[in-house]
Image (cartoon, rainbow, N blue to C red; front, side, top):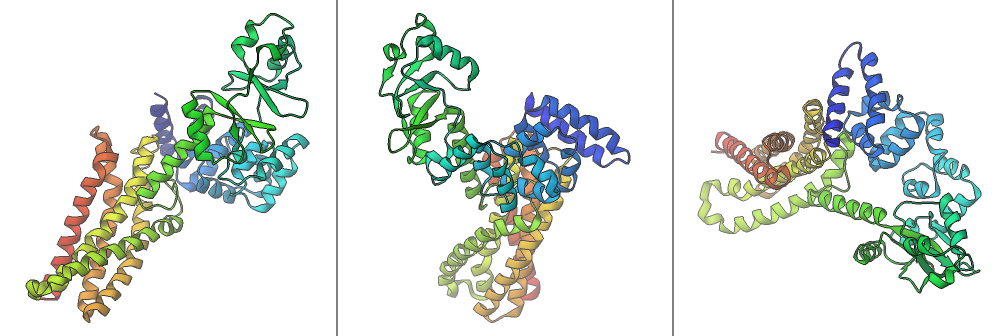
Length: 451
């Protein structure tokens, strides 16, 4: 139901943006959306709207909703938003961040904004930020949560319960006991704590030497250890055994999801997660590298086909270069398919923004199509010494890449409407489309110009 609600808000907002009196209609809609949708869903909603309209939605969000939504947005979306906002608006957005929030954003923020946000931290938050900054981003200590329920082992059960009334946190099933130097000594489960008689010493009910994670531990290893421990959270200690924080199950699964998203993007030939309406140039650059890699493998396949040159006679050059045409269209279409499948899974792609998506992807196809068509046309000319052959494959590559990105938009959308999984069947159909278009255009032009 929540995903359907998100999709409904996206469709209504985009319809209102196109109307003359749209401002009177979309403003109450945005106010309603922030009441019904979570911050994560508001981030998805913003990313499903073309960039030129995002500032209209953003300006009508409450300050607290803006900050929470900003943290859930993709890196590229944050950069676009920061460029659209003035410096004062950006500072207002960043002035109430916690140390954990700032650590997550540190690599993306311009120095002037990072310094401003750091200056707004109180002394305790600054100490936490500096502590976590001592660890590499691949180490657990960089991502530790500071909302760690810890007390001295000298306290009683009554005192510990009073502390918990003030500092209750999520995913908490135990409190951690420390010595006077701050070193982790043991843990007391909440069940034992609340069942213990008043004034019971914690030392009498604590479990000594609890399982703990190391701050220098690789983050992926720490995620797996926590999940396999079947605990809601584990304490994190440094090299000296000092308790510096904890790592909870919510953060662990969030990290695992980020790894999964990254692997999906890599499988589709994308450098990183790409939002639906990323700038054309960034999308083109993001995908161009893998198109280049694919060109090398396609030319290698063509070289093997060329070993049978004597048997192919007059059409040998066309036969040798056929895999290049099909493969370039295939990889370009699969990149668009990857972005679309993610958008469909998140409920961001609707009939209302499909046309805008097609328009954006068509531009990406034109940019990469022209660049690689010229490169491949030049390679064909130098290889076979025929400018007509170079022109033939140049036109075929351009048209096939454009056809591939169009198919990459419409194929998963159509499959989703027919209740088929676009992630499983989309690639098969897309490959068929690009092969047919590529071969028909290439061989058709070859028959007209070369024979």
